[in-house]
Image (cartoon, rainbow, N blue to C red):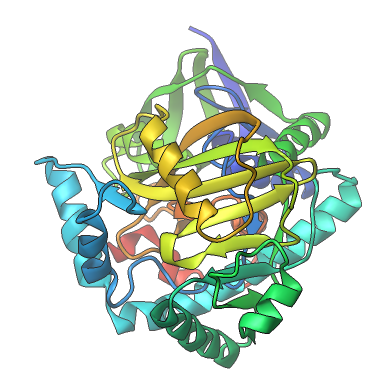
Length: 417
């Protein structure tokens, strides 16, 4: 049996794993990364590519349960759905989620989400400039579009809350909105522009990041699933994989939606549920949006990516399958046509489905395990795996190197569950 010894072993080659590898390598550590499939091709590669320090409200918030139930009454056009299952872990997650949909959870979540989001946004700008990544990165903000008076009213209230927490937000009436975004249809009543946000092509960014991680000296094992662990005396001694066994001084578990499956042998409480989303990418339209957009009532994202355009949407509490559902893709396209000018016939390049690792309280899990001294968890970022990647990478590097983190990580510890 092959046994490979390494300094830091990272499990997972998506946004979080690659960012952890990057910052650890830059700090002087030696890194080995194992990925069950192909690096840079996970659930962040086909997402909207939005970098959103404005997203400081967790998914588990007051009113979301009632809204979700209303959405489920219109399965054809709803942005949300959930599987029916008697699996105890799934039922436990749902109960925890409903209990977390409270004002106190929002108040607890805002400080770490704001700190991590801002750290990550700053790191994106520095990394892309320093590494000269050509990935269609643009600091034009994120523009929310509203078609209904009630929706716009809710958007204004949320903008006021963001402004109180130092998040820049411009509330735009109909005339101002159409002046700022000519691609919007006349039916759009107004908007909110979060001017501190940005966007990029996520697949291209992750490809470049993977290449840079390799160039910095990381040893990368693709198509190498983890099959188990040997642990003793509060340490993980061996990580078993299809390519042999690994011994590591430090282990970072960043396996996204697959984290609970990978960590099964470790008997840790990691309540991460997979939430499937979809996207379709196409050639540029005749009238291209000037900004990255969020179509508020339908929760659909629109992302101009150079000579491509991408629509992204849906949140389905699901199994671990990534099969593309054609009806879901069609629903996303229908929603977009209600907000912006879209060509009658689209030149679609590809469709995609990916899984977001979602915790019951809407906060990621980041921190050193209290059960295993050499294990750090970095998972549960939900729809923000791309956006929070560089911040998470820096935080994990600090933890491995025994440095104080840039902000208080206690709200993100796995032991909160």
